[in-house]
Amino acid sequence: MIRKIILLFSIVTLISCGNEQQKIEGKIEGGQGQTLYLIQMVDGEDAVIDSTVIGPDDQFSLTPHKGLYKDFYRLELNPNDYMILITDSTEKIHIDAHFGKLAETASIEGSNSTTLYVDFSKSIAPKILEMYDLDYQEAPEANGPRIEVLQKEVEQIAAKWLDGHSSEPGAVMVVQYLDPAKYMDVYLKIKAALGETMSNSEYYQAWSQFVDQLQNEISAPKRTPINEAIAVGKELSDISLPDVNGKIRKISDLRGKVVLVDCWASWCGPCRKANPEVVSIYNQFQNKGFEIFSISLDSKKEAWLSAIQQDHLNWPNHVSDLKGWDAQVCYQWGINSIPYPILLDKKGVVVAHGADAMGIALKNNIEKIIK
Image (cartoon, rainbow, N blue to C red; front, side, top):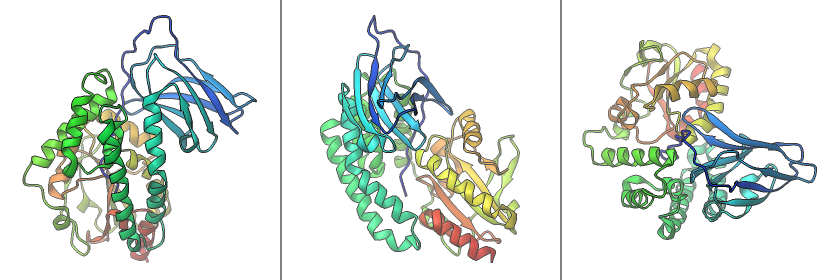
C-alpha cells in the first residue's frame, strides 16, 4: 500500500523578478505538434501558467509572464506524460526529453533542484513500475513478499538521498516514501530546514501542516489497530457520516448489495491515479448489485467536491467529516494509509481489503460474490 501522500497545491501571489524573464526551453523528440503546458497544481484544480505548441523541429520555449516563487510545478504533455519542475523566476532551464516518456528521459540544465529530484525519481522508477505491475497481476497476494522487498529498497534509496539533501525542496516529496512512524525525525528535520526558503510555497505550507498531523497521530492513543477492525470474514463496524449535502449516510443502508468502501482524499496522488480504475469497475458492475461508499479524508469541502467532479466519481455515496487524518474512520477502523479499499459482501462482511481489493483482485472478488 502506498503510504499517505499529500498533494495539496494552491495558487500563491506571484512576485516580480526585475527585468529578468524565466525561460523554459528545449527539445522533446517525437513531440512535434503537441501542446506542452506549464502547470501549477492548486487546491482542487490545476492552473495553467503557460503553454506552447512544440515546433516541427521538436523544439519548444515557454516564457511565463508572471514571476514564480520557488515551488513545485508540472511540465505536462498529457496527464500520463509529465515531469516535476522545482524552480523560480531566477532560473533559465533547458530540457531534452522524449515524447511519451518525459520524466524517464529528461535531461535538465539550469535547475539544480529539479535535476536532483529527477535523478532520484529515475533511480526508483524501475522498482515503482515493478511494484505497480505486480499489484495488478492475477493473484497479487502471491507477489506480496516481492512487493515488500521492493518497498524496502525504495525506502533505502530515499533515506540515503535525504541524508545529503534534507534542505533541498525535493526532500518534501522524497520523504513521503518513508514510513513516518519510523522516520518522523527526518520529516521534522526537513520541515525545519525548508521553513524559510519555501515559506511562500503553498505546497510546503500544506505539507508542513501534514507533518504536524502525522506527529499528532503517531503520539495519539486510542486508535483501533487496523488488523483488529478490518479482517476478512468479519462484519465491518458500521459508520455514519454526512454526504456532500449534509445528509447522514451509513454503510448498513446498502445491505443486500456488494459494497466497496473506498477511503481516499482529493490531495492523495495514488488515490487520484487509482480513481479511473474504480470508475471503470463501478460502471461494469453497478447494474449487478454493486455500490461504492466513498469516505474522504479531506479537510476542505471545495477540494473534495471538485475532485469528485474531475474524476467522474458518479455514485451517490460520498461522505466525509472533513477532519483529515483525524477522521472517524482513522480511529474506528485504524486507517493509516490511503487509498484503502474494503470490499464487503451483501451482509456487510469483509471479503477483501487493502491490496486484495484493488485492480484485478478487486474485479475477481466482485465477480465471485455476484455469481
